[in-house]
Image (tube, rainbow, N blue to C red; front, side, top):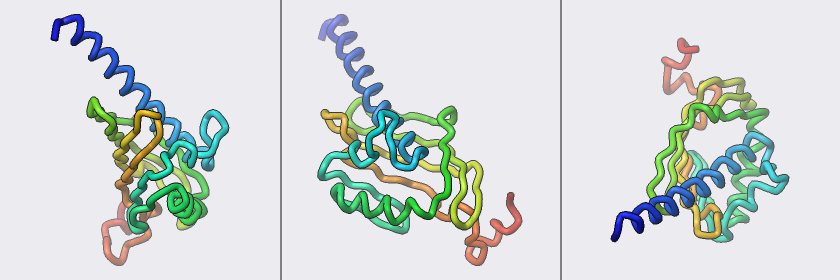
Amino acid sequence: MPVSGQANAAAANSAADEQRKAVVVDYIKALDNGGTTPSGGSVIDLFADDAQVYFPKWGVAKGKAEILKLFMEFGPTLKAIRHDYNSFVWTLSGGSRVAVEGTSSGEHRDGPWVGGRWCDVFEINKDSKIERVFIYLDPDYAGKDTARYPWLATSV
């Protein structure tokens, strides 16, 4: 491939990566805003009809109906959540896969938390819809699981 062809391909790939990142940011902002996207839509509208979402201790939700069920079951456990957008570390595959890690803080029904670490792995399709997101985090947001992890009782 000539150099100019490589440059054009790289530019197109970069633009596609930025579009995938924008979908992910809209999703995370919707989580911070009670399920409403920056454009005023529902977070569920960001997903493809046959999408999959994995959440620890819940499992894999398949399709929009199950994803909505997951959000409806988990959402009420959070009084507030805020992601630290400045802490995001992006890994772009050059294809449909995007990984982002970061921190969040907020208040769970069990108490507040600060600096909760997480990593989400997304697949975004050509229609800019989320096909898959697997969420990796400790769902014990407030650090109350001290019976199994005694160091939580002494940490801040």
